[in-house]
Image 1 (cartoon, rainbow, N blue to C red):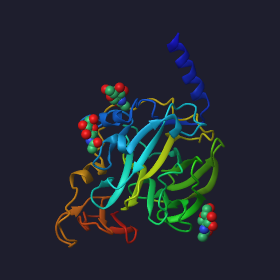
Image 2 (cartoon, protein in one colour; image 1 turned 45 degrees about the vertical axis):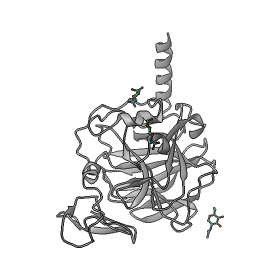
Image 3 (tube, rainbow, N blue to C red; image 1 turned 135 degrees about the horizontal axis):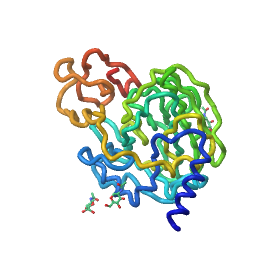
Image 4 (cartoon, protein in one colour; image 1 turned 90 degrees about the vertical axis):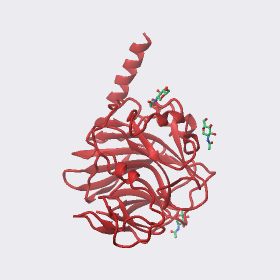
Length: 324
Ligand SMILES: *[C@@H]1O[C@H](CO)[C@@H](O)[C@H](O)[C@H]1NC(C)=O
Ligand SMILES: *[C@@H]1O[C@H](CO)[C@@H](O)[C@H](O)[C@H]1NC(C)=O
Ligand SMILES: *[C@@H]1O[C@H](CO)[C@@H](O)[C@H](O)[C@H]1NC(C)=O
């Protein structure tokens, strides 16, 4: 009986969606923040890879609670608190706390919609005087930023480093987004809304070098080093094969948990292995950085030359340069 009810609810929820969820980032399968630790390179389980964070216990960087979700999201039990603080150093140059999809699905084909909702409380506010990169791909073809122009206190949507849309980032308000990525056409647009309002298309698709290895979309926040503690809340995370679902709260909870192992050799994995050559100087000789790896920027001490055929390009000068 209980099972029947659950299945019925599941079908009901599915019927509210326009497209097909190809990856669910629901937090319903994570009973506690510590269960994110189930995942490792040797045990690739669950919906998220969890390795880009600081030195402290997971509960310092991630938390789960109903008060951390968009209240309109009825399919989720909890939202995620994601914290960046002075201990969030990863690979020496930045402070960052990020989750990455764990899946064998191809997250870079056809027309996909990357859904998420973000909010922040009125304590542990983001610092608008430093750059933040939010929910980005390794190649930065699209992302949100905070602490940059045209208004540094706004959430700004960027395509390849160029701002196309921005909104005030008010504590307690939920901002819902879907990146509308056409991997076939090489274009990206933006859907957005606040609270329980349905998504509307706020930016028509523009050309971009759309690509992902299906393990390089970062749900979270990377910032230039700072000492303050910042809290962000996320819910409604899923990737949908179009047409887009515009209603909030119907998409994330009912997706299937993805397969338990991945054969994709991720860029991120090799980045992890080649961490922190902090004593070396930035000379052109020495090891070569791999595609999407960092090759320069404030405080960066790693390889500054790229493996062929990639070249070192300014993504966010003077802070971040990448092999592309
Ligand atoms: C992680 O492990 C805990 C305890 O073993 C389990 O209850 C939970 O379902 C697991 N979560 C995931 C996402 O694998
Ligand atoms: C992390 O958790 C472990 C196990 O609960 C505990 O022994 C340890 O003191 C914690 N470390 C920090 C830095 O809080
Ligand atoms: C930036 O945005 C805030 C909040 O929307 C607004 O109060 C402020 O006037 C804006 N600043 C500029 C320079 O536009």
